[in-house]
Length: 538
Image (tube, rainbow, N blue to C red):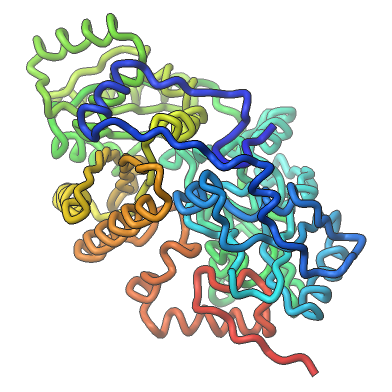
């Protein structure tokens, strides 16, 4: 069963090795042990639904609770301490577009916010109800989960937008194909959610980001249906797919999507190497990303994350042996771990693997065999479960991700990490900021930072720490010309920073599109753009 106040399946746990726990306590101090609010008390705090009885609506308390929050740190604080400022009033599970049209009409009549819901994995507040709303209706799209068509000659597959990651791969595998989009939330997130937030899978270097894979689809809006044909190419004006990509439910609800698929790879390997320090590691990424060939994954950890990665492996004897060997090779405390994957024809995988190894060695690094790469692959969707374990140990986790051009990445990452470490001094708190480059592009890379700090068993203090870290990170990102988000999207948490990236005119263009497609402002108000001004119905 899915956890109601944490990540993933409640039968799956990710233990924290003793050495990692000891390191955390030494760096941050002992974590406070807090008692989570019970499910029963949280359900009891829920007010009655403000929506009328309707055959499409479920108003039972558990459905409402489970659709009222995502996976951001403020969401966790609200759920763990049982202090939700708002709940959805009902959940709809539409089976077809006719149901969605009925729900648009119902939301307009009741003056209700209508929030599209995919897998609920958002970490920036995409699905959170507004406390000031008259009523809130969550629209769960997971009944739109069928494979609707597969054109094997063209490499195009059409799915319902509520299709979950594992279902997509399973259905494509039956015909020998893959989409290859593997975000860390793969097990629980949906195709529509990936498109609506401009998602990136872990092997984006080989398969592409979701904007590279999204070929067309159908967006149902209160003003009608917007059809996006899957054409090989078109010069008929601006590409409307890019209006839908990243729209976060503000413009309409995606009901189906056509994506570019490819035959399942003949060969695939995951390996690891160690670089002597962060700048040389970044240079390796830049050179490989310029001509990746069969390389589908590049993930470079900074020295602190590298150290913790070895501790989290939970095999102290092997870790000690690796430490001694690395020291003998001249790789000291500034060493950085590179995990890489190669995907494609076996001959290309082998040849490009040799080429990557050559680049690593030219920059003073060493390959370290298959074990770490294989372990990363096995645990790639299990790492988020550590959030549950760490919370119980007294530590909160927040993530920040951005992208910089190669020329700015090293300096920007140093400034961002320094800003995060300094920002908690006034409140006598500390954080650990671990960084890695998770996606590489020809012109730059995605910097992904994980912050750990004590939650102090106090929701107000926890949120104050989070706000300080968020403000410090965004200030550093903007100072170095980075993206406000590489792949998590905008939601609530990044909305104050959108105009700085898009410009006032750019935001106005998006708002004009919103007014055309959703003139009454029904869809997901408060996310991505300024709050919609509701049109009064006659």
